[in-house]
Every structure is written in structure tokens, then in C-alpha cells.
Image 1 (cartoon, rainbow, N blue to C red):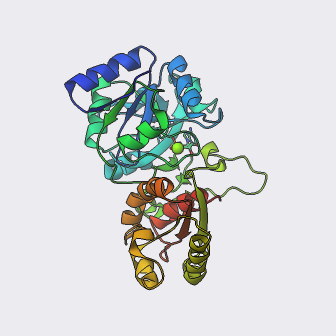
Image 2: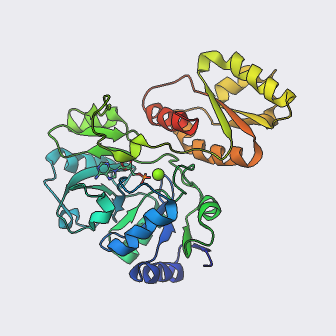
Length: 334
Ligand code: AMP
Ligand code: MG
């Protein structure tokens, strides 16, 4: 199969719609990462997402809709705090989980009676969803366990020859996947951290909990239990306080002939300038938002150039960094 990368316009959107209507898959941009989409009503098409990604059969997909789509057609029991959250944060990187009306294919939710709904803010992504005017089931457009894609080229690297069309919307600005919020209870509960933080949700909803799985307890967001986000090279992760040890590890690897690279935020890089040449650094930036935006891009760059990425965790741990640390830890082997 030939895989085309096309800019978003009338012709490419018509092609996308045709592919989706014939049970096919289309990759499309969002403000977080690229998605691999199928018609969410079409179980046969949705099955192909699991096949082509090698995704575990119990890891449900998020349903993406355009901003004027009436979600009450597909989910019910929507609590009043969700309307307030939608008003404030949608379109945007927040997925809300509601009770399903049973119309979306059960393949999407892997047998759960709930559906995660997302309204992406990316202009090209919105245009695509509006044009096809169907709910689109989509996980991130990467081979399962690999780093999520933030450019059309990243999607191509994983799915060349396996999907017909990638809609090109440039580099995703958000950089890490959406916050997943369980909205089936009286108080919303964060199942996966992201750019819309617990604090931002609590500010609007009055309260917000964070799901922390206890030993033996059923995982409420099945995707969180899997190895994830891993680059195709060796990785190590050091705490910020242990940057000297990271530098020593870099030196040891280089002496052994390995292409070792240090991945860290800009502040940390300044402290290492006398030890690590700038061209061996994968710089993540300064603020939590900047680091989130750069993380997957730099992990993908790292796997192209490095035998080993030696990452140093940023010092800041609040807000968006909760989600960043979750991804960085998993990328470096948990
Ligand atoms: P991905 O599409 O790769 O970003 O993964 C989607 C994430 O959303 C996974 O962590 C899923 O477990 C989670 N998710 C999707 N649908 C649901 C749902 N109905 N209930 C709980 N978590 C969900
Ligand atoms: Mg994913």
C-alpha cells in the first residue's frame, strides 16, 4: 500500500472521507499528538487500528469529534461539571469519559460501558472532523509502545506502507497526550495526566481526584498499565539532583564508543556545559509547557542519532510536569 502525506485541503479531506467510508484508516493532526483514526461506528474499521498498531485488545480508544458535534447522541449521564469544563477547556487537550449510549462500536471501548470523548483544538484536526462529520476513534498514530508522533514524518516512519493517508498539520504544539478524566462520578477523577492539570480541573469543577492504582486493584484506564513511549535505543533516567552521575555515565559510554546523548531541560544543560558538548545534548526547553511540547520530538530525534539517551528529570514537578514525568519515566523503562 502506498502511504501519502497530504496537506489539509478540499482534495485531501475528500480522500480521507472516502477512505473512512471504505473501512480504512487516516492519520490526522491534533494539538497533542497525531491520531490514527477510523469511523467509530464501524467495528471492522476500528479493528484495523488495533491490528496495525499492535495495540493490546483491552486498551480502549478515544472518540474524537468536532466542536459542534452533539455528544449526547453517543454518551449519556453527563454531569453539570463537565459542561463547565467543556466551556472553559474545549476544544483542547482534555478527554472526558462518560457512559456510552451503546451506539459507538464496542470495539472502541474494549467492552467497557464508557467512552472517552475528545474535541481537539488543532485547526487542521477540527477541519478534518467537521468535514467527515463522524465520530473518529483514534489512539496515537504510533506502533504500540513506541514514542507518540508529533509530526507527519513520525507517523510515516511507523506506518509507511500500512495506512493510505496521513493528513499533514505540521508539528503538534502540545506534545503529550490529552488528560483523561473520568466524568462518571460525582467528582471528576484524572486517569491520565496531561496539559489540563488537576488544579485547572478543580478550579472549575470544585474538586478533582487523581486515580492512583493500588496493588491488585482493577486499572480504570487500561492503557496506563502498559510500557509506553519508548524510543528504539537504550535509555537511562537520572533524578535532577544526580546530574553529576548522569555526566559520568555519559563519559563512560562515550569512552566505550557509544553515541551517548544527554536529554535535559535548559537550566540543567547550563550546569553541564563544561562536561557535555552542546551537540550531544537533546534540549527540552524551560517551562513545563515547553518541555511537554519538545519531549516526544526530542525522543524521536534521540533514537535517530543516539545509541543511548541519558535523560535527567527536570527539577520542577508541579502542574504540567506531572504528565511530563509520567511519560519520561515510562519512556525510560518505567
Ligand atoms: P491513546 O489513544 O494511545 O492516547 O490512549 C488512550 C488512553 O485513554 C488510554 O490510556 C486508555 O486507557 C484511555 N481511555 C480511553 N477510553 C477510556 C475509557 N472509556 N475509560 C477509561 N480510560 C479510557
Ligand atoms: Mg498512545
